[in-house]
Length: 270
Length: 263
Image (tube, rainbow over all chains, first blue to last red; front, top):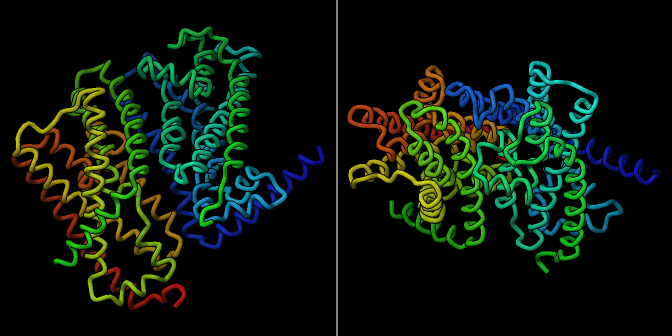
């Protein structure tokens, strides 16, 4: 317990230092904050644009898609806030500065997460959070205690699943030095997948998003369960409750990959 | 002129050395293409056309757009801006060539590389996976090339201005992200602007961003004919001139007024 508290303390210090350093370039910081709001708004604007032409996408109404969009956006936003900075690990590997992290008495992931955290990314969580809240209130959900509990469980599980994807794709950099582009296909591409009902994607993409990169558990299955809708995967409605288990599995795999990657690390320039 | 051609040629050769990065980039753009095409096709399950685009037009648009994103540099490249931040720009400005033309030559060298390395494979992926409309005759194909050359100039003009903001801001990540986010959205990188509500579409057409991506692809698809095509190409020419002249003046101002970092 004391160890966890100490880790959190270290993270706090690193994050605070980072905020102070970002704040030195004020105009840039504010513009970056604005850009995060813009990114989230563009995604929503795309969905709104599509629904200005149709009443349903893949059989889901606009509000129902908003529920998926909210779940997916908040989960991605949280993961991006706490661990998204990992996709810059290739920069550390190239510059040789990753070695510095290895000799410090703090776990590397915790260090990277804290020292490169950018609170502007909070802006990216807020907008989908509003969408999620509005969808939950306006939609006619047949509430019971189990469904109420599913909402926070799904958000946290989704964030962990995305966090795992960030860790795994960033680890590629230890073998190839450059990892961002392939990583982006899974992280930002994943963000696109969880904004829409899986019904719109072909059957092989659906299978991929369930079995290989388990994005279905982030937003689609929880939303389908809350609305008592059949899902396109043919899974029972309660499969939504597999989200925390899937999240745990992804986290374990991510930890194993990261540990292996660090063992594999050989400093550049040597 | 020979100098700038040589700069473009060497940039092209330099870019060709990053084979693995090219493969990774094609993979990522192809994944995006497949995802966006799937979403747009769901719209066409409900109706036959949107803003004059049928399903084949929309899918073609998505893949050609993915193929052109890097050609136009719509993700924002900070190579030039970084030299301002570090102060290296002082060396660039002392050299006996025009700063803006030099970087324009670099942009065209990169564009040529990305067109072959990214554009062609991604459009092939789309053609094999979904079916993509290809310009049917040499006339339309050459109109597309002309429109793309102009699009690269407009996108470069915008990038150059954003980069010059480093003289004042030093850290241009914010300006860069906001600038390119707007350019991507209003340029049709997420959904073609013909999907927008009428007021937004007409505003987007007047702004420089449609001149980067949307117009070349509409020419590719054969959506623009006669007077419409002429108007579109002239809009591109006008924006290229406006942005390049603005860049020229902003640089002159920066050189007169600003103390360069480290100087």
